[in-house]
Image 1 (cartoon, rainbow, N blue to C red):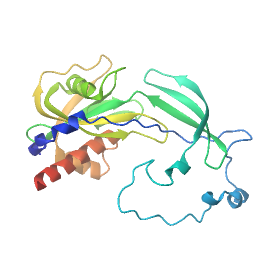
Image 2: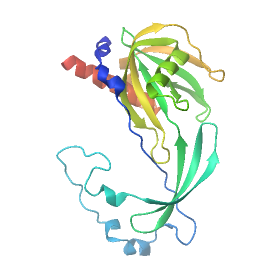
Image 3: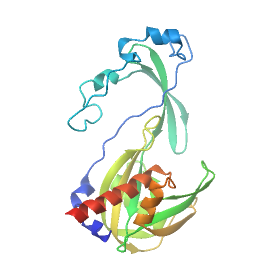
Image 4: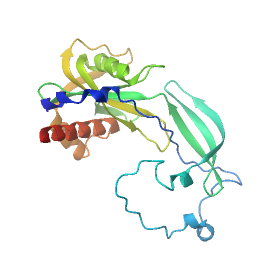
Length: 252
């Protein structure tokens, strides 16, 4: 796995693209999309019919908003209201017009974004953070991560969070990928970086952070991911991306 230090430096300057995502919540008035009855099913617009067309084979992957009929899937925002403001995220309620002309509500979590770091040692071990998560009521095992400060660039945030949580400073850091953590209801983007050539200078977690750090062989983490023992999405993606890169470098 030490071969991953040869990661192309051009990755570091890649700028992730933003996206907007939402959750489906029906309007509870006369204009709402009510629970569907058999009669409703019969009255659906042609594109809503149960006999949907067979999936189309394409010569290659077509990204979102680039396919010929993607424009037909778009929703028009009619109105919006900030329903709740919190310490880490806000919740915005949007009324939208659907492709068939009906209206519905979307509750969207607005988040300023975050980073996560695959920190890889010369001996092929990855730094993992053990942290209690109140939402799950248990300790989880994750790659280091943290939210962006206002106006902060993802790369600088990745360097800062790696040092704060693990004590490591990376001699080399490269952009891997960006994930939408839960695009069904949130616009949060997590930018994932690969950190190598690590030197230890001592951790400085936030006052409300209590962490333990483990160094685990990458293959053990990948096995745990494939066995369904790691649920954290950024850790799953980071581990598998690291594994794929190792195989590609080995083939070169």
